[in-house]
Amino acid sequence: MSKIKTTTITLLVILGILCIVFFINKTSEKPHIQKCPDEYGTTTAETTQYQIDFDKWTNNFYDSHHGATLSDWSKARYQFWIENGCTEAIQRYNEAKDGKADPVIMNEIKDNIQESIK
Image (cartoon, rainbow, N blue to C red; front, side):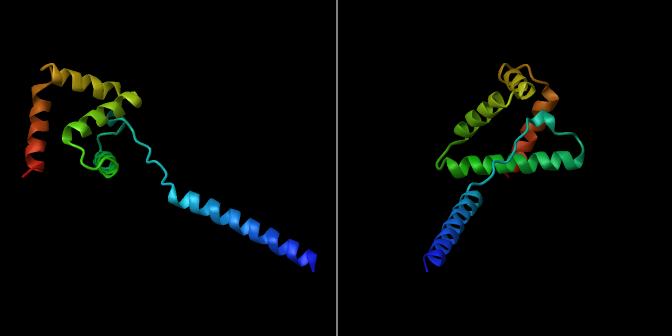
C-alpha cells in the first residue's frame, strides 16, 4: 500500500510542477522584439510591419501607463530609442528639435499627423 501512495504522491507532485510551469509560461507574455525605425526596410511589407510593431508598442505603453499623456508617450519613445541604440532616430529627433530637419520630411510628418487626427 505504501508503494501505491508513494507513486501517487510522486505523480501528483510532478503534475503540480508541470501545471505551475505551464501557468507561468502561459501568463508571462513574451516581449515583442522591437527594432529601431531604421532597421525596417522600405518595401510595402516592411513598412506595414513597422506600423504594426509601432502600434503594438504604443498600445502596450498606454495599457501599462493608464492616464499617460502624449508627452509621456513621447518621452518613453525617446527612452526606447536610447535603450535600443536607435542613433539615426535620435539624430532625426534632435535635428527636428533644433529646426534643422529636412523640410520635405517634416511636411510629410505634419500631413500624416493631420490625416490621423481627422
